[in-house]
Image 1 (cartoon, one colour):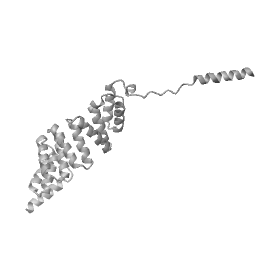
Image 2 (image 1 turned 120 degrees about the vertical axis):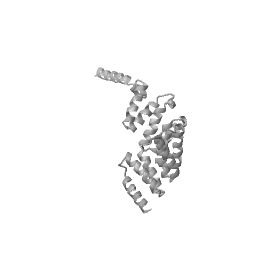
Image 3 (image 1 turned 90 degrees about the horizontal axis):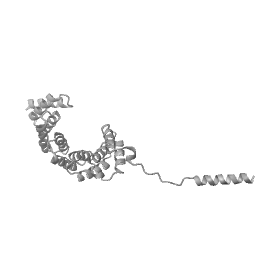
Image 4 (image 1 turned 120 degrees about the horizontal axis):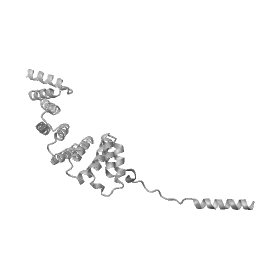
Length: 226
């Protein structure tokens, strides 16, 4: 009996000695998952192209947590800002776009998308400034002029919008939507002959624009009445 209790005591003592101490598990880094910079960037690019913006943000953040000099990764910073925009998390998106254009003041796409963001946030004056900054970098991009013109129309600045739209036509002569918007400005000004000319040119390029045929008929009617 004494021998039995002695053996139990020895076994318990031995088991206690085998207990592992509390060891903190090292934090997993991106290098534990991905072998190279290129591998993780390709993964981010695939997520971005598939419009899986939340996963894209998570992977970028995961990557940045373990990187030195991350401020230089312009493309990844841009993808994160843009992803928040597409997820309609406007506050976060603006925070990151502001940081991005401060670090890279010649980054045209950052200024352009920041303008689109501010437009969505109902901040037209700030959006206009951002479009202008994008055009300072490159003033030969027709769609920036076009989006800026649409913003000016929303701001009821038709004269400035008309100038911007004519710049679009200089860069892209076959833009039906630009001709349509020029027609709308002339229509609002009750210059029906000018409006009709713009509408007919737009119809030659793209016949299926909502409301186009109605505007053409109305302009013809007004011209006959005059």
